[in-house]
Amino acid sequence: LIDWRRSASSDHLYVREREWEAAHTMWLWPDMSPSMAFRSHLSEVTKRARSIVLMLAAAELLVRGGERVGLLGLTQPTASRRAAVKLADALAQRADDPVLVASLPPKARISRFSGVLLISDFLDPLDEIASRLEVLAGAGVRGHLVQVLDPAEETLPYDGRTEFIAPEGSLTWIADRAESLRDAYKARLEAHRAGLAAIAHRLGWTFLVHHTDRPASEPLLALIMHMSAGGYRWQQPAPTKGATA
Image 1 (cartoon, rainbow, N blue to C red):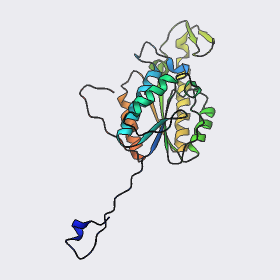
Image 2: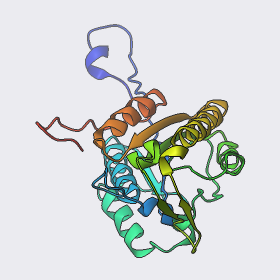
Image 3: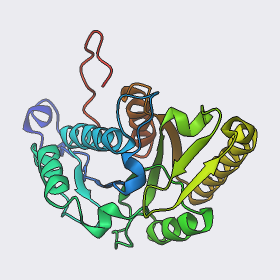
Image 4: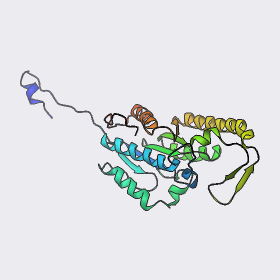
C-alpha cells in the first residue's frame, strides 16, 4: 500500500488509500397485471409495454454504472453486463407468475440499504398500497414509485353512452352520459394521486407520474436524478439526436 513514487521524494513514507465503493442492489418490479394491458386511442403503447421498457432501461444504466439489479421476488441480483437481457428472459418465461400478475409488489425480504423501483398504475385502494409499501420500507429500503397511466385514464375523454369493462372478470358498467362523470372522476383521481404522493413522502421515497403518450425518456431522466441523489451510480446514455428512449 506504500506509494513508492511519492515516498521517494520525501523522508516520510506515504500510504495510498483508495475509497471503497460497494455495489448497491436495486430491486425492480413492473406491474404486469391485467389492468396494465390497457391502451386507449390516445396512446400507441400499453401501460405494460411502457413499464417493461422503463424497467429494462433503468437496469441497463444501473449495471453499466457498476450496480446490481434483480426482479423483486423472482431473480437473484446480478451485475452482469447482460443483466437487462436476463431480466427480459425472466419476464418472458414467467409472465404468469403470481409475483408479476398481482397488482401489488410481493412481500419480499430485502436487505438493508437496498433500493426498489416499482412501476405500476397504482390504482389499488390506498390502504392496501400503503400496507404493502410499509413492509418493503421497514428494513431501511429506499424506494422509487413510477405511476404509469394511459392519457385516457387521466382525462376520461368519452362522451355519450359508454360501456366500461373491468380488466379482470366480467364486471361491466354502462354510463348514459360519460361526459357527466368527468369532473367527479378527475377529482377522485387527483385525490388518489395525492394519497400516493403522501405515502411516498412519509416513507422517504420518490414518486413520479408518467403518461404513455409521452416519451419514455422523461421519467427515466427523472429517475436518474433521484437515484443519483441516493448514491446509485449510472452510466449516462449517450445523447442521440431525435431519440426519445
